[in-house]
Image 1: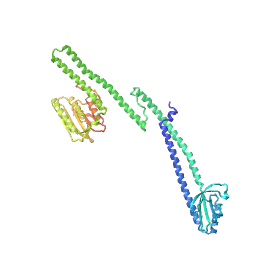
Image 2: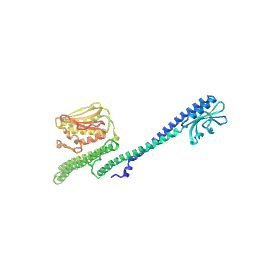
Image 3: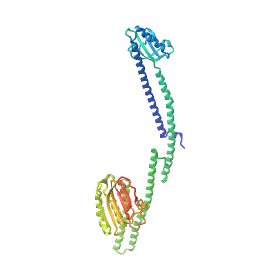
Image 4: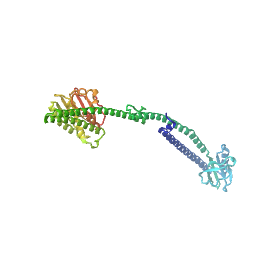
Length: 461
């Protein structure tokens, strides 16, 4: 059962809190910028109007100017306008401002003012913008306007923040808590499955939670990895059984021969023959052990640092020179066909060993009078080493199994071998990033060593 502490401390809730905090800061900065820009724009507009009016009124005659001041005061129903005319000594002649403030420069420019108007004594320290301009006769004209609308704008912004930000933050946290709860449930199920797997239940898999997010894709990848591990462990179990069986057989034969010879050998020639046959059995066991060790090294990725550029045609020619006498002795038609190929990168000895194993398998399972073809082709820009024969072939359902260690088909168990040849080829191919494709040669079998990085499914017809 998930606790509130687990949910609140989940990564999803933390991320939601960070997003909510970032969103709050962003909104505050945005509203502050909007208010600041609006206040500046409105102030500039008021200043421009006041400065223009002061300039226009300053061109009027004194009687006309005094009448204009009276008219503006009379028309100010909302009590937002300051307009007054002062004599050169600073005494008010007409208007609604008793005294020109000392801190207002008489320069015809707009300035801030906090002043009480005589007839509106109840309104103290009202914010105004005011322009004081000296007339040609020495008098001073003062024109101002209330800008409390900017304070109203500020209050609107504050109310918008109070009404918008808290619900948005709360919604973010609620959504974060919901997804945090769901994520915690999913992760709890993952942890339970992981515990079972760690206790040795390799058939267990992490619960599928979709592939629409990183966690879902990670779970899918882990399940694929578990499939590979289970397959590897199962293969190791079978390999151990095959190793025990394949090593026990030659070792048992060696022991029996030695035991029999100790009681039955009548001459040094008979004893030498038994020793020679025993050595053959021990060599067979050593070959199995050596092949397994080499495959283990290649499966771990060792040896890639020693890769170099090489020409496949040279490898093919060396293999051809090696098997022409063998195929001639078995009366098998051995054909070699090569084409111009791009240079590949790899370990020359290992690639030659892979080709040797393919040719050796083809020769081994092809009877007298048969044929084996070793060739190179290019398909889809990738060089391919192809070995084909007209032997019994490999059944479609066995084309993946023959790449497993110690696998022996029922049809070929009578042929001497350890079942490691194609496994070794597969290990060499995977070390180089190559692939193996097995097809029918109609009749016989065709095996391609595809020297390219693209995945090619083995077993296609």
